Every structure is written in structure tokens, then in C-alpha cells.
Image 1 (cartoon, rainbow, N blue to C red):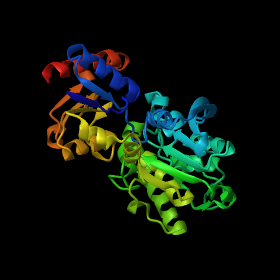
Image 2: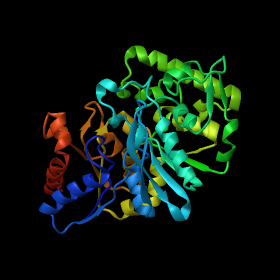
Image 3: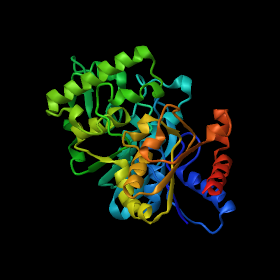
Image 4: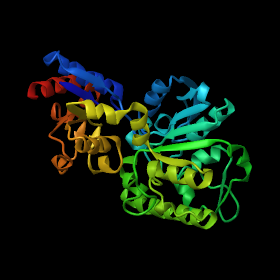
Length: 370
């Protein structure tokens, strides 16, 4: 039997590569004659840098940049010298996992570090920059990142606003005259979701997991609507009509309007790069998953897209995850079975720290049931 393991990372626990290896190890203990293909996947979020960098044979650049709360930390991005290409993963410098729960506050967090990495890569001669924007701790519409590149976000009195979501409330105008040197740079934003910018299904959908309280939600909603209004007035672009504009707290939409960035489905980009469709077509069974499976999985994330491809190619698909929403009818999406780490231990902390061992056990359980 040909088994394709194409999993995303389990955020804050285990990389996509290690997920695949762990499940494969468990399967081969029971079915050593199975032919297993491991294909780690990402959608713009955690793991994007590692996967693209490995495929394109880039090199890792170590540097320091600003984290979501304004502190300088060590971080990395990739460069493919022959292509003059930089690969930046927002999660590495502005990611939610970088903050303990009591420090998460999307009104104050910033993407400034993302802009600093872009600036660093441009100084090294990069002419094309890929930015994977999933798993952010931010809802600043990218003004933190773009401020680091020299774009000025101003209030009514022509004073700079804070480079975070709170700053969006007072935003009145944008001055990008100082960035003519960026016009020859191609920016490609890999979005992990397809949400628009504002409204109930916009960037605000992810605010609670980023630490927003009920009171914060109303403030964030006003901030996003004001940013949309300023962009509409100054650039004649309605970000609520741009698919994926709400990705990573609106950084995708902000860079699209102000920096002429292309918004691309992170999954589709990786799908093409890895030749995923052919691998699915060739498999007898597909195993896929991510850390948490719920309704947002089907808003353009890799796992939801893989399930859709399996349905198209009429392939059996099994889901493996850290946890999942109990009210989710996963069978309606064409999956036969779902396995989760939390069902092997009720303790989330134990599940995260022992993910590799538990995934190996799940791999063996899958092999026994086939």
C-alpha cells in the first residue's frame, strides 16, 4: 500500500517534518512492507521557511529583529542567492507562539520585526521576497512591518501613530514617498487563510486566540474599519473585496494596497513547489492534519485544501491532530477517521511535550486498522 503523509506542523509542539516521521515510524512497526512518502506541508504559517528553503536549497541567515512586544530577539530567514530571493516566515519573529498567554494582546503587538527582516534581505541584494504570514500574534494590518521600511503612518496632526492595532484607530494618512527604492522589489505574501479584512468573517475571527477580550473585539473592529477607510480613500482599493486581505491580522491587505504585494494562497504555492497533486493521485491512503482542527481549517488552510484534493481524486483520507472541535462533522468533508493527541492524554501540556511518541502510537493504530 502507498501511504502519503502530508501534515502541517502542530503549532507550539512539533514541526511538520517531525509529525510525518513520527507517524511513518508507527506505521512501519506494524506494516513494514508499506510504501510511505513523507511530504511536510505548510500554508504560509509555521514551517513555511524550512520547507521552501530545503526545496530551493537556500541558506539560513541568522540575525536579530523586533518581536511582537518590541523586544529584540534572535531569529532567522532564508536566502536563495541564485534567485536573489528571500524567504521570510512571519511566525519566526511576530508569531503567536513567541508570547506566553498572559502577554498576548493584539492591540499592542506589532509586525515591526517582519519589516526589519525584509530590510535586511534587501541590503543583501534580494529582489524578490516571499513572506509567509500565518500564525501571527498581530492585528496591525502590517503597519509595523511597513514602518520599518520607511513608510509613514500618520494621524490628523501628521504625527506617527503607534505601529500596532491601537495605532490604526488614529490613522489618517499614509506617506510612502520615501520608499521609491522598493519599487523594483517583488513582494509575494503567502496567506494561510482567505478572509477579507473587516466584518465577522474578517481578520477579527482570529482575535480571541491572539489574546483579545470581548471589550478588545469592539476596539479592533473599529481599528480595522478605519484602516480600510483610509486605504479606500488614499489608494482607491476596497480591502473587503480582496481575497486573503485579512490574513495575519491584515498584513496581507496592507502590503497589497501600499506595497503592491501579490497575495497568493500559501497552500497553492507549496502545492506547486512540492508537486502535491501528483503525490495524492499516486497514493492509496493520505494522512493529513495540523495542531487544531476546527471550522477555520476550511478557510483556506493546508489541511482543508488537502482534504478537498483527496475528495477530488477519490482517495481515502485520515486526519491526525493535536485536538479538534467536537461539534465538527469531519465526515461530511470526506474523511473516514480522526485521531488526536488529546484523546491519548487529557493533559494538553503532556500531549505537546510527548507529541512525537504519541504520533508514533497513532501511526501504529492506523496501520492496525487498515
